[in-house]
Image 1 (cartoon, one colour):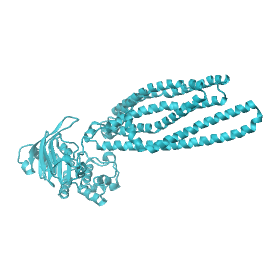
Image 2 (cartoon, rainbow, N blue to C red; image 1 turned 45 degrees about the horizontal axis):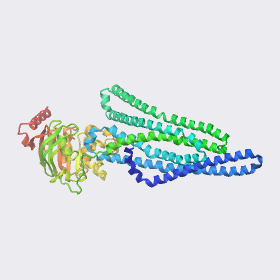
Image 3 (spheres, helix red, strand yellow; image 1 turned 60 degrees about the vertical axis):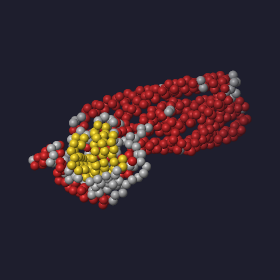
Image 4 (tube, helix red, strand yellow; image 1 turned 180 degrees about the horizontal axis):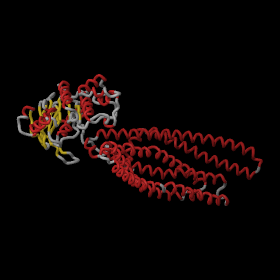
Length: 585
């Protein structure tokens, strides 16, 4: 139960509703028990009438009508309070479910980029959906039925003992056996529930990746192999679920069997005691039978609730694993400072934790506000890492990055990132309209601004050709658009926010050279006061930059302007000559 203690803050948030629900549970069960007492009195009245003869018939009818009225009234009140009980406690469980999902999602947003490289999307989705649902069953139905059971036990058992102590003792014999069985079964359920949730995460991850990569699966005719892998994973998951269900299946037969045994004891022992006069009236025996049957559902509930609690605990442990992770990127700055765009790297070294690859080694350079820096180098040389460090998606392993003369950690994270326009190499668009995807860079932008920046990114003419224009709904990850169109929409999204720092990570690789030239010319006009860093494999994207860096194996091997670098032997000149020859061909 230790993991479930983390839910106490949510219970405190809705404590008044839960307290009211508790008292309403007592009221609902009181009237239910009151009904049994009335039935017992009616049976006793009938017994008296049978023994006394027909002379008491008018009095019997009057008494029975009155008691039947009480019976009906108590039943209605019990039903009404039961309705209120569900409205309070079950509704609170939905509130807590929503709060927990919000907290998990906020934690996902706080966690650093490295976390997402180490955890699969399917598993993240499963924890915020299936695991939270398991927890909701604990904070709602489990607590409600457990309260009902406790109230009934607290009221009914003492009443049974007061009415007929020896018969009550015989009747309650099966309960200790039940408690031991529940303890044993609940431990087994806890282990199996954890395994089931883990396999559900694997299934979710596999299907999510399959659907995201469906074009690759079809292109390589891997449907059969993929289905085979899915079928095997599904079969393993089924077996784990069956292991859990087999254990859970013992609960209700065990409950019903033990309750049935209690009924037999009541009928046999109670009948003997009624015959020998130990029990004074028949109504007591009938009440005992009704009380035993009234306890049937609560006792059965104990087993069901136990399985729910164990499943919820297993799920909450999985949720807490992520909720307790501290983000690697901590926002330690409290003061807000304006950003102008000066950037300086001082002997920066960075090693990825997940792969232990050192991507940058003692890198130093500086850019003044409004300048353009181009970074060129072979694949895997560390170009994209520089951009990720400027956006503080990672913290440097050693060295210092300064923005406007301040160490990056001294700048409020919101101030830094709100002034950065970032276009990644793999352009990501959301399943929304094209217009809304562009507005993602500035949610308050007008339609006229959207059109203007789409024109600057040379994608406006493509968008208006669509049937619904800017209102065209994109498929998942922007699959509706071509690679070049996605890149240009991403550029428009970055520009519309008027950032002080613009980071372009090889985002023109899918456009032709003429479109590239048009976009670069537009960028030059729009980013006069913006510090721009362009990562590219094309000389055409870098040649007009104020400064060009050549990165090889995480180190700066060349640095200078286009004219300076083509005069020197090295990577840049070789690439320039190669691309010039390809263009002439």
